Image (cartoon, rainbow, N blue to C red; front, side, top):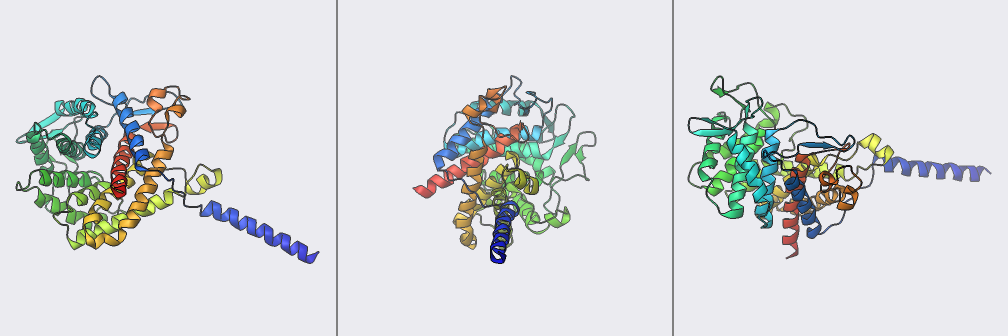
Length: 393
């Protein structure tokens, strides 16, 4: 009887330990998809963005499936980012079809641009603010459009947007976030954890398109600021901050080449993005797991990790200082992209929504999808598809 009781106790403990491990340290789950699945998911996201374009050149900003409603809100930085993602898809895939939609959204940005001296910048038509991020992403989008089409009609516009970015840069390589039309100068008190990396990427793209014009000097200055000082100066906890825009910029610099300090920064970013994907792969909708670890991250965040990893993979592919992390980067890219495929609303699932047209191809978090969910997932997925397909060749 004693032995039987002891066996029962040990069995109970063992089952309890397994349940505890499954709850506290859930298994690492990575879906297995091929490049075609990544590209098909990206195409569904493109289709969502194309359907969401409004007559005034804006996109559907947000949809709440629980209330079947469209909140009255908009964000010009995200508008520029979504437009950029369409040009990026065209440049990566060779399919220039989405450029028609992107060009309509681009014209809206041109129409609301603010002119000062020899530069232009996008101005919010509602509150008249002039932010660095929207102009930086518009410029990045134009650079990708040029890569996709070879069309040089917007070259001077790109230079004028680029000169605004230079106007916002400080001597240490960092950037201010707002230009104040009423003072005719940048606001010296406000920076942005997003806009600095966005500006960096735009400047690096400009140098690669127009070598010899001097865009590399400010790009290198901001790369050094990001690598050496940003996390401390801007007081980010748990450095490095997971900045996919910085990863984009470093990837554009891969043939310059980057410095040892910048390579170390790239490695630290790869570790951070890889960690985030690893943690995400352990999340689920299971009640106890979600209660302890939180539910799945919205696509607007998750997609940025795949963007960052794909950028760093392209850097590592040609930089032997990062050769030892190439395989790990590939694994994390496939894992992150696979989770995005799994979480996207399919056409069959969309039929259960009040408005299937705005559900299909989208990613929802707490019953809400926002246009940048589709943007960041699209960017990560199409780049993951290109990398995975190249590996198979």
